Length: 375
Image (cartoon, one colour):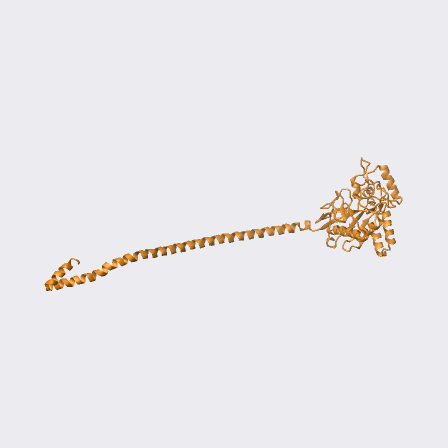
């Protein structure tokens, strides 16, 4: 078409029909070609924009795909955590159930219970008696017992110290942790028995603390400890505290007849009510087939009401030969006293001396062999 333009100009100059035709063709050609020639640059200009839009769309699709994958991953992790938590909960429930079964199986072993008789039984759920300001446990003593016995001893020691001051109750054996036979004792098998030393005063009437049980003769003089005497006031205060403790349920206070008489005489002198003196007279006794209790009280509490089905109140009868042997001193190759004395076992003195002591006791005097010197 550009070639026709010079020709069209010459034809216009001649002004012929052919020239007119050529002029029309030359004018029409640019009009038809203009859009074509103009459309190419527009298309060229629009192409980069489309590519950018496509890139943005692709980026958005990629971002959406990435977010979807991230959400899927988070969902998967959440499910895994939920499953893990559920597994832990199931395991915890199984553990709880297992512990509950064990607790049910071991409940009897942890529950305080006095089984059987004082001289033939066992103990579960025992509590240990420990030293305190007003109470001292003897070194080497087995101090496990029913909670009622342990609390009773603590309260009684406190009451004596509150009334007289500067007092510490010396406590020997109660029971082994699981009860059963205890060396040096016929009973002390069910957590209801306790050996408690006497309160002692010196020649000036002052409280005298010792780390062992001190034996006394019928006149209240200490055996093997010159100048020391049986403290009537504090020992009666102990008896009174034990009997007036409504939670205690004290049944027996084993002690020699001579010391029992001293305590009752002191109570009458102090004008203690007659009913309390009668209770004390009934509780204090010297069992026929037991060792002499001239260096300690043997305290026994009653079976708690919740244990009446398993707990036997009184000791079981023993054969006559065993009962007779209970009063005899134990044989030993050593004439000196031993540590067993502090738990109520007669001193292993020479047989002649022991026989003399038993003969005096039969005549109405509760005299025992010398006790070991204080340490």
